[in-house]
Image: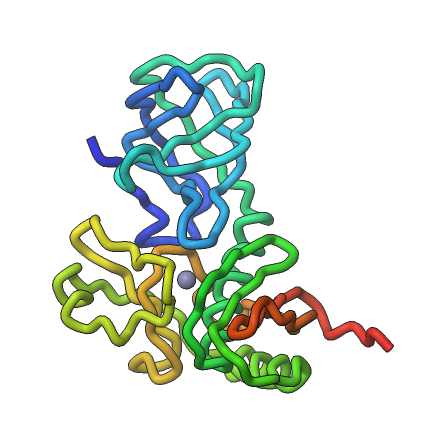
Length: 245
Ligand SMILES: [Zn+2]
């Protein structure tokens, strides 16, 4: 049975009750529903813990998809107590970590607005994220930071709009990423929209984001690296720019 991935409709849900529907040989646990994000689209899966009825805890080291996107495997650290099928637990996402990932992920979208080049790769991290662009131009990182912070401070709303796989197929131009597949295969695709009526941006993405740009907080471009003739790697970090002189 496909898991009910609650974070798709509410990225701020940090806990939920769930029933164990499968326990795999490698330790991966499936639930009927979950608020744990599974690694995909450049965003790492959630960590956290499961709370059993007796109050004991099972610590989760990672969350990933199984053979299909309908399967979400919650993988405990080594030497955790085994679970039983049908057991009801409370799932707790490590919220401090996830919120940083949501801020960073949203910052990556803002960067794609400031730098309107095709994206060739991206990785969201708790402390640093990187986005690779297919571009040959040289750009000043402080200028990019200033434009990013303008978007943050203007506090645009960030929200999802759902379209069907067919609607996306009919509008391939809305996909900025050259080699990251949009989250199709579930029948519906979430568009991450920034600004009233998507005035700033709209992009297919299955990750988790903050609700308004101001929540991304102080961010800056720490580095722009040349990775090949037509590839530039931008590194985003939290905090104010650090003077390297
Ligand atoms: Zn996203």
